[in-house]
Amino acid sequence: MGTTSASMPGPRPSGRPSLRAALAVSAGLILWSLIANLLIGDTAYTLRNLLLTGGLLVAAQRAGFGAAALGLARERVSDGLRWGAGAVAAITVVISIGVAFAEVLPAVSSLLADERAQLGGAALAAATLVRIPLGTAVFEEVAFRGVLLAVFLRCCPAKVAVLASSLVFGLWHIAPTAVSLELNGIAPTTPAGLAAIVGGVAITTVGGLAFTWLRWRSGSLLAPVLAHWATNALGLLAAATT
Image (cartoon, rainbow, N blue to C red; front, side, top):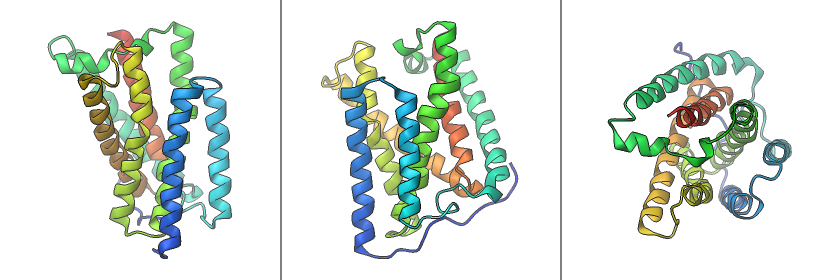
């Protein structure tokens, strides 16, 4: 994937007002996750998230964030493609190994047990080629590794900004994890459900750190977008074929 790296994007810390802005964006994203997952559901999922992506980018531009701060600099596209392709290859290998050992490893088998994978061919293709890349990966990477990370970098040291934005990404997944549990016949308020939610937050926080590392190494949002797509889409395909 090469040795190219980029310095952590974004303006230097500028004080308490920027911290309030970062906390407000964080709260807004978590609130939207609750509303979208628990109240709205799948209605116009891809379209609404694309519209929100555009709204976030317009708001960020008006707040003074340039393309480089958001991971959208044209000169970093090739680096994003290179690092993203490497991440997709690595994720493919890991998921393939998981599928191969699913029958003998109960933990892997349980991870692949998802009622949402019971889709027909056309619906599965639409999920992996449209809904996940456009409605999930692009939106969430712009929101978290683009806008939120840039906002935190205005008020916090780089390490704090990375940890904070990744933790918010983990908390963002509370509501979809609860919905997934319900779909798979597990009440979110039971001990097993609560443990699954806590585990989901931990795993997605670590995932957020990994996606941020890709964003930093490549200087482009394209790398984590590709990795995010591969994680979700290949995971869904693996669940559908086991």
